[in-house]
Amino acid sequence: MYEAITFETQLRVEIFSGVFLLMALWEALAPKRRLTVSKTGRWGNNIGIILLDTLLVRLLLPGAGVALAAAAENADWGVLRHLPLGFWGKTAIAILFLDLVVYLQHLMFHATPLLWRLHMMHHADMDIDVTTGLRFHPIEILISMGIKLSAIAVIGPTIAAVIAFEIILNATAMFNHGNIRLPAGIDRMLRLLVVTPDMHRVHHSVVIRETNSNFGFNFPWWDRLFGTYRAQPVRGHTDMTIGLAQFRDPGRITLLHLIMLPFTGDPGGYSLNRLGRDPEVLGGKIPDNETEQPRKK
Image 1 (tube, helix red, strand yellow):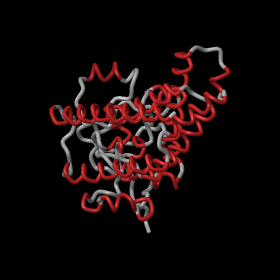
Image 2 (cartoon, one colour):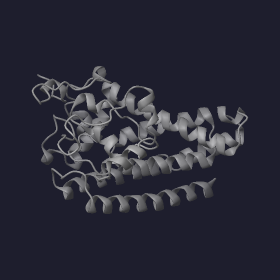
Image 3 (tube, helix red, strand yellow):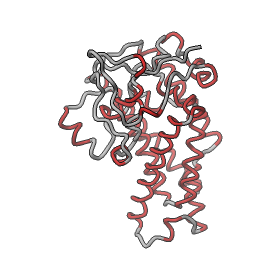
Image 4 (tube, helix red, strand yellow):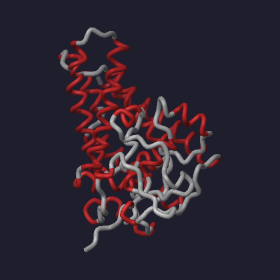
């Protein structure tokens, strides 16, 4: 057990470091969008959040997913244990199921007012790049871990499936939040298999009906299947506004403000009732009620 957890930790750190450096270099050499706020300040805040999240998980839930998968294997519990499939079949199904759980969880964080308060810290980033993909409120991280562990307990995946899923989720989160330029043809082919930066960037639009789309992290199929897929932002990738309309002052989005955001920040006029509907464009402009406007006092 200890060896499996140690192996998982070392492997995840090595792959994380490699993907992070690759994406950071790619962003520097071929950025998709011009940054609107200081990169130094944003990266300081975002990396501070990432380090806090990592420390919290390692202190409270070190190797919890691997440990639970090992316990399921020893006790022979979980749905997958009773299916007439081989190792690779069970591993593939486990990865797909866990990815579906992450998609539904993401949708839930947008649909539930209390959970949205936690999740809006992720969306309050005024630019989007590799660090945005790992910037989540510590309480959201713990809730997400609880949901993931519940899913693991239900299906009883192999240890290999849990490790593979965690690595894929971590790597694709950095990739699909990357501020990188991809040829349109390559993007069209890639998004048949994986969520691309152009696909996920739509989700970080200030326009509500675009924020409520493209919830997938790893695989793009769930958005197409459940009607939450949107191909492109109405204003285009270089002209769209990233973030939330009620948080436009970069001086107020410091590390402390980010931690306190769920408790002190205005959640805005957010609503899921625009799910799957196109933004209204009047005279070439999107009206104010299509964006995350602060609620009137």
